[in-house]
Length: 180
Image (cartoon, rainbow, N blue to C red; front, side, top):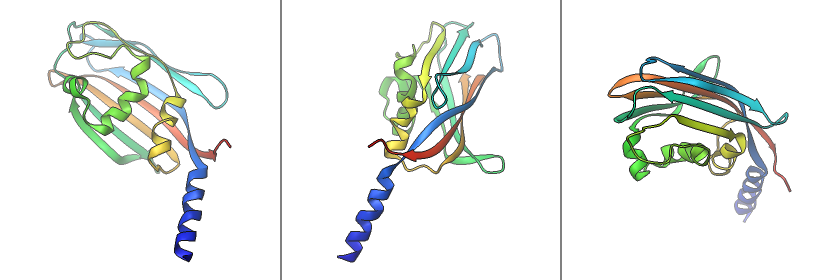
């Protein structure tokens, strides 16, 4: 009986803490301007606690097909070190089936604020507009226990096995009391 009581107390304490996510930095770049280049890549503050991200990638080589992405999550601990996720996947295949739950989580964060909503070929510029921290809070902090700290989400884009661009988003997870 005592073990059940302790377990209930621990579960209640865990449910009181919900992580708050804040964008701290955003870096976008191109390795090959013949394929694509970034015209917009910034974080805008809504207020002291919430910020949003805007990215506009001008695609110079249309159509883009055979797209591969490398997604890494790194945690800051005296330098950024690999943390849990390092996946390389076929972007076109994912957009067709969306079966990988880890990739799907990251896609769900920006899907409604983007024009990346169809399968390959990509024959237009790529726009991610007003992705705010609430999109991330609604997913990861509710279902996945993640240690508070600084993280980077690094994405490298490849077309026909040649890298052409990257987007690195830096976020801070911090605890806050749950709204009652």
